[in-house]
Image: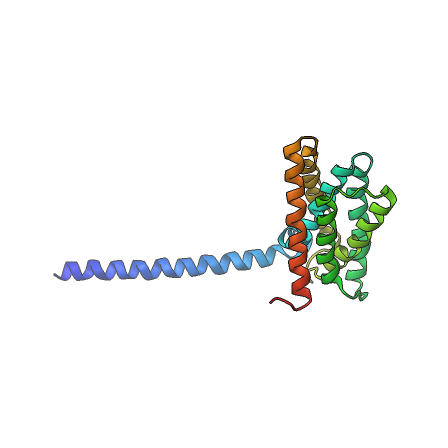
Amino acid sequence: MQALQHLELSVAQRQRLVGLLAVAAILWTQNAWAHEEVGVAGGLISGLLHPVLGLDHLVAMVAVGLWGAILGQPSIWILPVTFPLVMAFGALLGVAGVPMPGVEFAIAGSALALGIAVLTQSRPPLWLAAIIVGFFAIFHGHAHGSEMPGASNSLAYGVGFVIATGLLHLSGIMIGLIVRWPAGLVTVRCCGAAIAAVGLYFIAGSSGLIT
């Protein structure tokens, strides 16, 4: 009986030990993640993740690639180059603390407008398409700059979100290339509709219509 009680006690102790180890592992992971956000490596990681973790950023950047692929040469590369360049300027404004009204609303509006452009296969002149993309890029960049973690390296952070943006554009281009086939055209238009719907959702949220 004593041996059995001792065994039961050992099992209980093991359960408590496992619980303590689990808590310690969680706390260690959180501390490690916080530590990674410091310095050059942390800035690069934060910059890479920022556009990806924000759904409104993500869909708008994919839409730029989609729209460029739909418009063809030279838009297929001009639009994805214009967006990061102008976005970097907007990021500088955000880092400098220059106020810009309606940033979140404009970011949501970019998803709606670009999604509609993809859905309707809109084909404006190249200069107008570049202006539209560049206009929205300023707001995306301002959000990136103003939300930069305080302990991060600003240059590495900027490199990170530019790389992430370029990869999202490339994803959109790769998807957009399937428009040459009838089924692909339908798929791309569905992507445009989905992107526009996301933009409309965020606009409603920015306007306080939904919580």
